[in-house]
View (cartoon, helix red, strand yellow):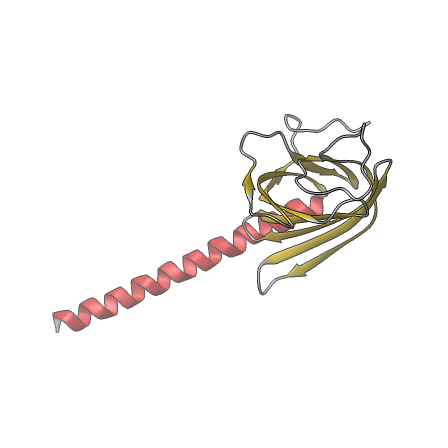
Length: 168
């Protein structure tokens, strides 16, 4: 009898814990969705995965992709071959411009967002695809004409005055 009572109590507690976990996940997704829809956030990469190699840690490198109401500014390290190198230009991916076209797909069932945009600036045209999960962890793929695509993994956070990237 005690064993049966213990099993029932354990079942009730585990279902309550599962509901709480689901509610927390839904709340985090709502916060992430609100952040992305606000149009002002900062992505900081933890790792980079070049197309022809394994991933590297970016713990000690300065890197970011900032979006502020359609203006995109980024400095992301690049590891790979350039098709049309500018020998006096930067080796990293540097973007500074307004997005030309953008789309946001909301996948509520999977608690995932897909933000895609194109930016043209003096360094070329860049297509950026951000796959953002419910807790803000993000996979960013950057494609351009002069370089093979490269992926970054990190987290998005609000673009505050302290972390604001100067937009001139």
